[in-house]
Amino acid sequence: MKRTILSLILVLLTAIAVAIIHKHAIDDDMVSYTVDPAVQDLRFYWKDENGQPLGSIQRLKDLVSKEHRKLVFAMNGGMFKPDQSPVGLFIMQHVMETPLDTSSGNGNFYLKPNGVLYITKDGKAGISVTPAFKYSKQIKFATQSGPMLLIDGDIHPAFKKGSANVNVRNGVGLLPDGKLVFAMSKSGINFYDFADYFKRLGCKQALYLDGFVSRTYLPAQHWVQADGNFGVIIGVTESE
Image (cartoon, rainbow, N blue to C red; front, side, top):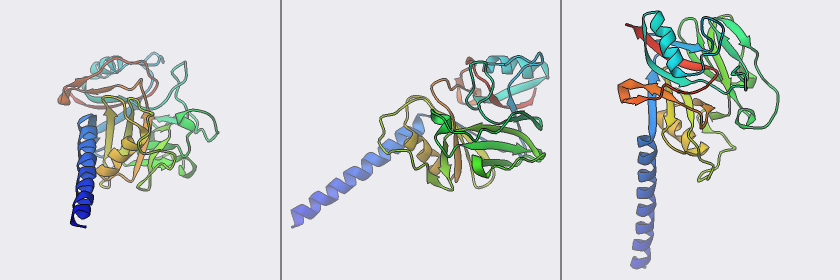
């Protein structure tokens, strides 16, 4: 009996150790940046001064430099069509550039519920499932993507623990204090583990942004990817 109990304890401890190692490995494989939109200059970008899609983070860096601002963080901000126009809702500087997409279809964007990341003019951030999103003139920036990673603290029901569907992924979560945490995996990760990362940070709502095309610019953490060919780009700047 004692030998059986000891064996069970050993199995349990081994499982716990493996889980801890797995979580540490995921955390080490993430590039993340926390933004306070109430005090930091967080904006969503799409086109340059000539009406052409910026495409790359480098072009965004060049654009803000002309305004004597320094790019401190950037990440692609949602899925896009072949012409680099946003898939779904995109609001920039209070102007709705593309409408909310409530239709059904194939691909990650349509793995419902999908959702909307938005910033109001007073710097309040929100992540809403698409059916609950309410348009308001107070919304300064918004981008729609999908699927949701977390809905009211729960991992999206379609995600499977241990799934072999791995890819580089980036997304955003809303922290209880109103700050946003943006994260990108450095290598392949499945949806479940990616969502669980935001859950362990304390997020109740989190939204997937995109996959293998994802890039992050974060020189403060010695992570600089200035290339890419995107639609929407999310950036944080400060005065030079």
